[in-house]
Length: 219
Image 1 (tube, rainbow, N blue to C red):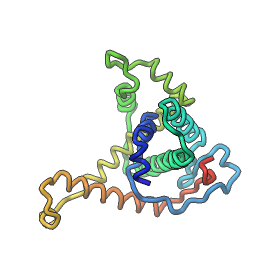
Image 2: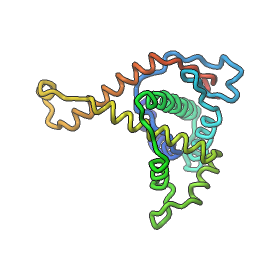
Image 3: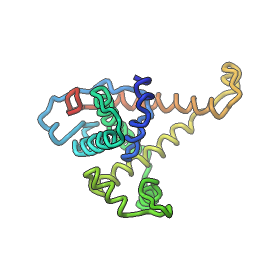
């Protein structure tokens, strides 16, 4: 699967362009149930009782495939299946971490959110200034309201803050450096931080109730 994503690197970058947090964690969602409720018409998944609206999922994957096709990518059935799965996975991950940010007391102010959006390269004009027309055109293409998009971004910013907090607990001992014969301490620290994050997220996932209401094809 990793070779497949490397092959379609340009296509996957386009997914990031639509503004949602890319999958960092390798932990799986092993407690999912597919398509077992009539409410799946308006809900993509339910995370600890909190619904992820189907419209979020639909907007992201619909716009992603439009971008893929317009860029000349060969949108195969395999690419569609994997991309849909990744979009849903990212939305679930965002919601799980968003719920954890509340437990840790992490917040995102309106000013932080505004600065984030206004500095996003996709929304800047030729003079490197925020262009509201580009922003609203982007939202129009996504078929997403400013409120919905800004809710997603707020979750992603809070997620980044929490990940930095969890990763800050990573410490590399002198014995680990010697054992791995590492000359680059920063790289070893990053590896350790990733391990800490994945262990933490795996624990969060195992203690969460995740219900997917889409079928195996992501529809």
